Image 1 (tube, rainbow, N blue to C red):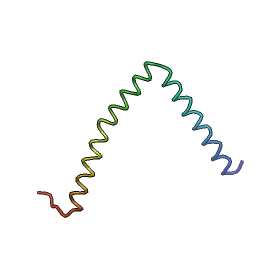
Image 2 (image 1 turned 45 degrees about the vertical axis):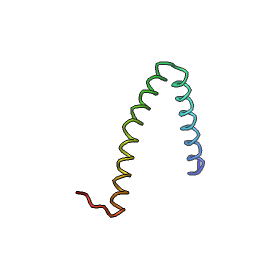
Image 3 (image 1 turned 60 degrees about the horizontal axis):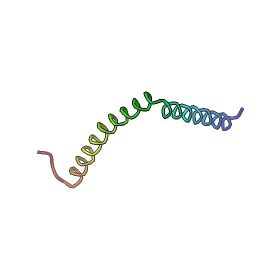
Length: 67
């Protein structure tokens, strides 16, 4: 097996596993609720932190010193 065909096979296996996992999560209500709760938690914490970081960088690049 060549390196390229091994890479293609592993990508296909990972894609199939990801689709299967998504199907199970979406069709099982407790798992769907858990995934939704995790998504809300992740978005609720990472998006504000990202925005604050970007505002801080923009502030610094605009030449405003921290006081």
